[in-house]
Image 1: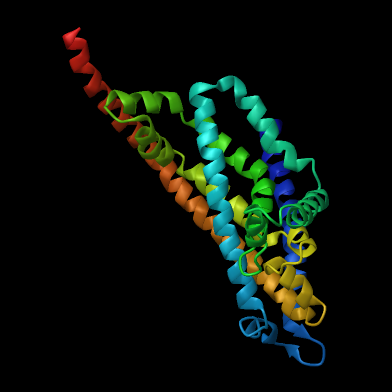
Image 2: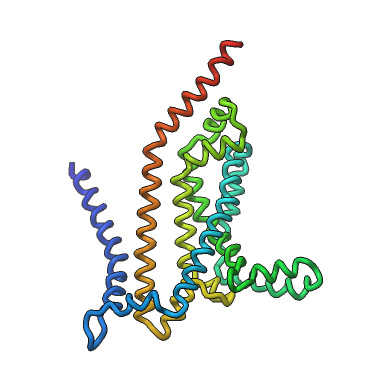
Amino acid sequence: MARLTRTPLWRGAVGLLAGLYFLIPVAASVIFTVDVPGQGFTLGAYRGILGADGFADSLLLTVELAAATIVLVMLLLVPALVAVRLGAPRLRPVLEIICSLPLVVPSVALVSGYSSVLRWGPEHLARTPLFQTFTAVQDKRFPFVLVLAYTVMALPLAYRALDAGLRVVDVRVLVEAARSCGASAPRAVLQVVLPNLRGALLNASFLTLALVLGEYTVGALLGYQPFAVWIVNTGGDQAQLSVAVSVLSLVVTWLLLLVFAALGRDRTRSLPRTSRRAGRDAAAALTPAQEVA
Protein backbone atom coordinates (compact mmCIF):
# COMPACT_ATOMS: atom_id res chain seq x y z
CA MET A 1 0.00 0.00 0.00
CA ALA A 2 2.86 2.38 0.81
CA ARG A 3 4.33 1.89 -2.64
CA LEU A 4 0.96 2.50 -4.27
CA THR A 5 0.50 5.78 -2.42
CA ARG A 6 4.01 7.07 -2.99
CA THR A 7 4.10 6.60 -6.76
CA PRO A 8 1.37 9.19 -7.55
CA LEU A 9 3.07 11.69 -5.19
CA TRP A 10 6.38 11.32 -7.01
CA ARG A 11 4.66 11.67 -10.34
CA GLY A 12 2.87 14.78 -9.17
CA ALA A 13 6.11 16.28 -7.85
CA VAL A 14 7.92 15.60 -11.12
CA GLY A 15 5.02 17.03 -13.10
CA LEU A 16 4.95 20.13 -10.91
CA LEU A 17 8.69 20.72 -11.28
CA ALA A 18 8.49 20.23 -15.05
CA GLY A 19 5.56 22.64 -15.25
CA LEU A 20 7.40 25.28 -13.24
CA TYR A 21 10.52 24.77 -15.36
CA PHE A 22 8.55 25.66 -18.50
CA LEU A 23 6.02 28.14 -17.12
CA ILE A 24 8.28 30.41 -15.06
CA PRO A 25 10.34 31.63 -18.08
CA VAL A 26 7.14 32.12 -20.07
CA ALA A 27 5.55 34.10 -17.23
CA ALA A 28 8.69 36.23 -16.89
CA SER A 29 8.60 36.93 -20.63
CA VAL A 30 4.94 37.95 -20.49
CA ILE A 31 5.62 40.29 -17.54
CA PHE A 32 8.53 41.83 -19.45
CA THR A 33 6.28 42.60 -22.42
CA VAL A 34 3.40 44.19 -20.47
CA ASP A 35 5.29 46.01 -17.69
CA VAL A 36 6.99 49.18 -18.94
CA PRO A 37 8.99 51.19 -16.37
CA GLY A 38 7.25 54.49 -15.71
CA GLN A 39 4.06 53.45 -17.55
CA GLY A 40 2.92 50.34 -15.75
CA PHE A 41 0.74 47.77 -17.46
CA THR A 42 0.48 48.17 -21.24
CA LEU A 43 -0.23 46.01 -24.28
CA GLY A 44 1.65 48.26 -26.69
CA ALA A 45 4.14 45.53 -27.59
CA TYR A 46 1.35 43.20 -28.69
CA ARG A 47 -0.54 45.92 -30.56
CA GLY A 48 2.53 46.74 -32.60
CA ILE A 49 3.17 43.19 -33.81
CA LEU A 50 1.01 43.30 -36.94
CA GLY A 51 2.37 46.68 -37.99
CA ALA A 52 6.01 45.82 -37.35
CA ASP A 53 8.29 46.16 -40.36
CA GLY A 54 8.99 42.75 -41.89
CA PHE A 55 6.66 40.75 -39.63
CA ALA A 56 4.14 39.71 -42.28
CA ASP A 57 6.77 38.95 -44.92
CA SER A 58 8.93 36.82 -42.63
CA LEU A 59 5.95 34.93 -41.19
CA LEU A 60 4.50 34.24 -44.64
CA LEU A 61 7.88 33.03 -45.88
CA THR A 62 8.25 30.71 -42.91
CA VAL A 63 4.76 29.27 -43.38
CA GLU A 64 5.51 28.60 -47.05
CA LEU A 65 8.84 26.99 -46.17
CA ALA A 66 7.14 24.86 -43.50
CA ALA A 67 4.45 23.67 -45.92
CA ALA A 68 7.02 22.74 -48.56
CA THR A 69 9.20 21.02 -45.97
CA ILE A 70 6.29 18.95 -44.63
CA VAL A 71 5.35 17.83 -48.15
CA LEU A 72 8.93 16.89 -49.01
CA VAL A 73 9.47 15.03 -45.74
CA MET A 74 6.29 13.02 -46.22
CA LEU A 75 7.13 12.22 -49.83
CA LEU A 76 10.51 10.91 -48.74
CA LEU A 77 9.66 9.04 -45.55
CA VAL A 78 6.19 7.57 -46.01
CA PRO A 79 6.94 5.53 -49.16
CA ALA A 80 10.30 4.46 -47.75
CA LEU A 81 8.87 3.31 -44.43
CA VAL A 82 5.93 1.49 -46.00
CA ALA A 83 8.19 -0.19 -48.58
CA VAL A 84 10.57 -1.33 -45.85
CA ARG A 85 7.69 -2.72 -43.79
CA LEU A 86 6.23 -4.60 -46.73
CA GLY A 87 9.19 -5.81 -48.74
CA ALA A 88 12.52 -5.32 -46.98
CA PRO A 89 12.30 -5.48 -43.18
CA ARG A 90 16.04 -6.07 -42.93
CA LEU A 91 16.68 -2.57 -44.29
CA ARG A 92 14.81 -0.96 -41.40
CA PRO A 93 17.97 -0.45 -39.23
CA VAL A 94 19.76 1.07 -42.22
CA LEU A 95 16.90 3.52 -42.80
CA GLU A 96 16.81 4.38 -39.12
CA ILE A 97 20.54 5.13 -39.04
CA ILE A 98 20.32 7.32 -42.15
CA CYS A 99 17.40 9.31 -40.73
CA SER A 100 19.18 9.71 -37.37
CA LEU A 101 22.42 11.10 -38.81
CA PRO A 102 21.31 14.78 -38.62
CA LEU A 103 21.18 14.41 -34.83
CA VAL A 104 24.96 13.97 -34.65
CA VAL A 105 25.84 16.65 -37.22
CA PRO A 106 25.70 20.23 -35.85
CA SER A 107 23.65 22.79 -37.75
CA VAL A 108 26.74 24.93 -38.25
CA ALA A 109 28.49 22.05 -39.99
CA LEU A 110 25.48 21.51 -42.24
CA VAL A 111 25.38 25.19 -43.17
CA SER A 112 29.10 25.13 -43.91
CA GLY A 113 28.55 22.26 -46.34
CA TYR A 114 25.59 23.99 -47.99
CA SER A 115 27.57 27.21 -48.39
CA SER A 116 30.50 25.37 -49.97
CA VAL A 117 28.23 23.64 -52.49
CA LEU A 118 26.36 26.85 -53.31
CA ARG A 119 29.66 28.66 -53.92
CA TRP A 120 31.12 25.79 -55.93
CA GLY A 121 28.12 25.41 -58.22
CA PRO A 122 28.04 28.80 -59.97
CA GLU A 123 31.82 28.82 -60.38
CA HIS A 124 32.10 25.42 -62.09
CA LEU A 125 28.68 25.05 -63.72
CA ALA A 126 28.30 28.51 -65.26
CA ARG A 127 28.00 27.11 -68.80
CA THR A 128 25.63 24.27 -67.97
CA PRO A 129 21.85 24.17 -67.40
CA LEU A 130 22.52 23.39 -63.73
CA PHE A 131 23.62 27.00 -63.22
CA GLN A 132 19.98 28.10 -63.35
CA THR A 133 19.14 25.46 -60.75
CA PHE A 134 21.71 26.83 -58.30
CA THR A 135 20.32 30.31 -58.90
CA ALA A 136 16.70 29.26 -58.45
CA VAL A 137 17.20 27.45 -55.14
CA GLN A 138 18.73 30.64 -53.68
CA ASP A 139 15.90 32.97 -54.71
CA LYS A 140 15.20 35.44 -51.89
CA ARG A 141 11.46 35.25 -52.50
CA PHE A 142 11.41 31.51 -51.80
CA PRO A 143 14.81 30.04 -50.89
CA PHE A 144 14.31 26.37 -51.68
CA VAL A 145 17.74 25.66 -50.22
CA LEU A 146 16.18 26.26 -46.80
CA VAL A 147 13.53 23.64 -47.57
CA LEU A 148 16.28 21.14 -48.36
CA ALA A 149 18.12 22.01 -45.15
CA TYR A 150 14.98 21.85 -43.01
CA THR A 151 14.06 18.50 -44.56
CA VAL A 152 17.38 17.00 -43.51
CA MET A 153 17.02 18.40 -40.00
CA ALA A 154 13.43 17.16 -39.66
CA LEU A 155 14.16 13.57 -40.72
CA PRO A 156 14.94 12.25 -37.20
CA LEU A 157 11.79 13.78 -35.69
CA ALA A 158 9.45 12.78 -38.50
CA TYR A 159 10.93 9.28 -38.71
CA ARG A 160 10.30 8.61 -35.02
CA ALA A 161 6.70 9.82 -35.26
CA LEU A 162 5.92 7.79 -38.37
CA ASP A 163 7.72 4.70 -37.12
CA ALA A 164 5.71 4.81 -33.89
CA GLY A 165 2.50 4.91 -35.92
CA LEU A 166 3.60 2.02 -38.12
CA ARG A 167 4.38 -0.08 -35.05
CA VAL A 168 0.72 0.13 -34.02
CA VAL A 169 -0.69 -0.63 -37.48
CA ASP A 170 -0.08 -3.99 -39.14
CA VAL A 171 0.66 -2.67 -42.62
CA ARG A 172 1.08 -6.08 -44.21
CA VAL A 173 -2.32 -7.33 -43.03
CA LEU A 174 -4.08 -4.15 -44.18
CA VAL A 175 -2.46 -4.27 -47.62
CA GLU A 176 -3.22 -7.98 -48.05
CA ALA A 177 -6.85 -7.42 -47.04
CA ALA A 178 -7.18 -4.55 -49.51
CA ARG A 179 -5.49 -6.55 -52.28
CA SER A 180 -7.83 -9.48 -51.63
CA CYS A 181 -10.73 -7.06 -52.19
CA GLY A 182 -9.34 -6.18 -55.63
CA ALA A 183 -7.42 -2.99 -54.84
CA SER A 184 -4.06 -2.33 -56.44
CA ALA A 185 -0.98 -1.86 -54.27
CA PRO A 186 -0.87 1.97 -54.60
CA ARG A 187 -4.60 2.20 -53.91
CA ALA A 188 -4.25 -0.07 -50.89
CA VAL A 189 -1.56 2.19 -49.46
CA LEU A 190 -3.42 5.42 -50.19
CA GLN A 191 -6.91 4.38 -49.11
CA VAL A 192 -6.20 1.83 -46.37
CA VAL A 193 -2.76 2.38 -44.85
CA LEU A 194 -2.52 6.17 -44.85
CA PRO A 195 -5.93 6.77 -43.18
CA ASN A 196 -4.81 4.51 -40.34
CA LEU A 197 -1.61 6.57 -40.02
CA ARG A 198 -3.33 9.93 -39.73
CA GLY A 199 -2.24 10.42 -36.13
CA ALA A 200 1.39 9.66 -36.97
CA LEU A 201 1.24 11.90 -40.04
CA LEU A 202 -0.16 14.75 -37.95
CA ASN A 203 2.53 14.31 -35.29
CA ALA A 204 5.30 14.28 -37.89
CA SER A 205 3.82 17.37 -39.57
CA PHE A 206 3.60 19.22 -36.28
CA LEU A 207 7.18 18.41 -35.32
CA THR A 208 8.38 19.58 -38.73
CA LEU A 209 6.35 22.77 -38.46
CA ALA A 210 7.72 23.51 -34.98
CA LEU A 211 11.28 22.95 -36.21
CA VAL A 212 10.85 25.34 -39.15
CA LEU A 213 9.22 28.01 -36.99
CA GLY A 214 12.03 27.97 -34.44
CA GLU A 215 15.09 27.26 -36.61
CA TYR A 216 17.53 30.18 -36.63
CA THR A 217 21.03 28.98 -37.48
CA VAL A 218 20.56 27.89 -41.09
CA GLY A 219 18.54 30.91 -42.17
CA ALA A 220 20.83 33.42 -40.47
CA LEU A 221 24.10 31.96 -41.74
CA LEU A 222 22.81 31.60 -45.30
CA GLY A 223 21.66 35.23 -45.30
CA TYR A 224 17.87 34.81 -45.33
CA GLN A 225 15.27 36.22 -42.95
CA PRO A 226 12.62 33.69 -41.95
CA PHE A 227 10.51 34.28 -38.86
CA ALA A 228 13.06 33.21 -36.21
CA VAL A 229 15.78 35.36 -37.78
CA TRP A 230 13.42 38.33 -37.92
CA ILE A 231 12.63 37.95 -34.21
CA VAL A 232 16.31 38.01 -33.29
CA ASN A 233 17.06 40.98 -35.54
CA THR A 234 14.10 42.90 -34.14
CA GLY A 235 15.24 42.24 -30.58
CA GLY A 236 18.25 44.51 -31.04
CA ASP A 237 16.06 47.60 -31.47
CA GLN A 238 12.72 46.60 -29.94
CA ALA A 239 13.29 44.08 -27.20
CA GLN A 240 9.72 44.06 -25.89
CA LEU A 241 8.29 43.57 -29.38
CA SER A 242 10.67 40.69 -30.04
CA VAL A 243 9.74 38.94 -26.79
CA ALA A 244 6.04 39.57 -27.42
CA VAL A 245 6.29 37.91 -30.82
CA SER A 246 8.14 34.97 -29.25
CA VAL A 247 5.43 34.53 -26.61
CA LEU A 248 2.71 34.76 -29.24
CA SER A 249 4.43 32.18 -31.47
CA LEU A 250 4.80 29.88 -28.47
CA VAL A 251 1.09 30.14 -27.69
CA VAL A 252 0.20 29.48 -31.33
CA THR A 253 2.50 26.43 -31.34
CA TRP A 254 0.80 25.06 -28.22
CA LEU A 255 -2.63 25.59 -29.78
CA LEU A 256 -1.54 23.76 -32.93
CA LEU A 257 -0.23 20.92 -30.77
CA LEU A 258 -3.62 20.62 -29.05
CA VAL A 259 -5.43 20.67 -32.39
CA PHE A 260 -3.18 17.99 -33.87
CA ALA A 261 -3.51 15.88 -30.73
CA ALA A 262 -7.31 16.16 -30.86
CA LEU A 263 -7.39 15.16 -34.52
CA GLY A 264 -5.10 12.19 -33.86
CA ARG A 265 -7.20 11.10 -30.86
CA ASP A 266 -10.39 11.16 -32.93
CA ARG A 267 -8.74 8.97 -35.54
CA THR A 268 -7.44 6.57 -32.90
CA ARG A 269 -10.95 6.07 -31.56
CA SER A 270 -12.20 5.20 -35.04
CA LEU A 271 -9.43 2.66 -35.73
CA PRO A 272 -11.26 -0.39 -34.28
CA ARG A 273 -14.27 0.31 -36.48
CA THR A 274 -12.04 0.69 -39.55
CA SER A 275 -10.19 -2.52 -38.74
CA ARG A 276 -13.42 -4.44 -38.33
CA ARG A 277 -14.67 -3.11 -41.67
CA ALA A 278 -11.43 -4.13 -43.41
CA GLY A 279 -11.69 -7.59 -41.86
CA ARG A 280 -15.27 -8.01 -43.04
CA ASP A 281 -14.35 -6.91 -46.56
CA ALA A 282 -11.41 -9.32 -46.64
CA ALA A 283 -13.57 -12.17 -45.37
CA ALA A 284 -16.27 -11.40 -47.94
CA ALA A 285 -13.69 -11.46 -50.70
CA LEU A 286 -12.08 -14.69 -49.53
CA THR A 287 -15.31 -16.66 -49.07
CA PRO A 288 -16.12 -17.08 -52.79
CA ALA A 289 -12.54 -18.14 -53.48
CA GLN A 290 -12.76 -20.82 -50.79
CA GLU A 291 -16.05 -22.10 -52.18
CA VAL A 292 -14.54 -22.39 -55.68
CA ALA A 293 -11.57 -24.27 -54.26
